[in-house]
Image 1 (cartoon, helix red, strand yellow):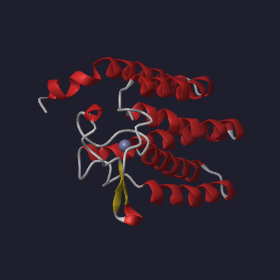
Image 2 (spheres, rainbow, N blue to C red; image 1 turned 180 degrees about the horizontal axis):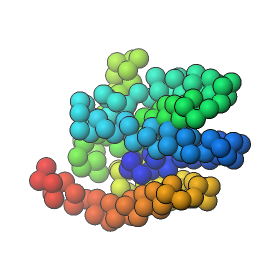
Image 3 (cartoon, protein in one colour; image 1 turned 90 degrees about the vertical axis):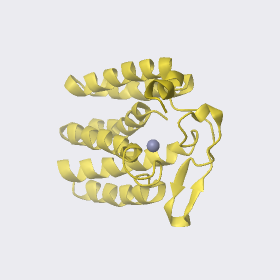
Length: 182
Ligand SMILES: [Zn+2]
């Protein structure tokens, strides 16, 4: 799935926080955005979908820090909890997409995301056929609507900008590997 889809789904988690505690809306959103992006930094360092993708550990940490944030609400605790929850959601949802290959529509990779506690790869489920598929863009748009309605200022700009980038990426997705010469 596209990173914009992961950011939008992370921000969806921040929407109820913003509704319950408007003063904590900004740290919740910032934590969600960073957590939504973080796992895909392993595109550039280490092994993609393994080095920074932790479906289990992020999620467990998200629950613990989430409970802590409810007990001791503050900008830092809320941002950290949303960060782990969004990173966990990102890592889990990659399982429902394609493998980690450069041309995922070819379906030559059976590695969706690494399950560290079991020391094995999860096989792709192809619910979203590949990152940048039309259904992926649809997900970005649908998931982004509540965040666009809830947040304002630069955060709303970020959400709308993400949708625009996602649309452009979807349009040219299959040409990207050729353009990069890979
Ligand atoms: Zn990912």
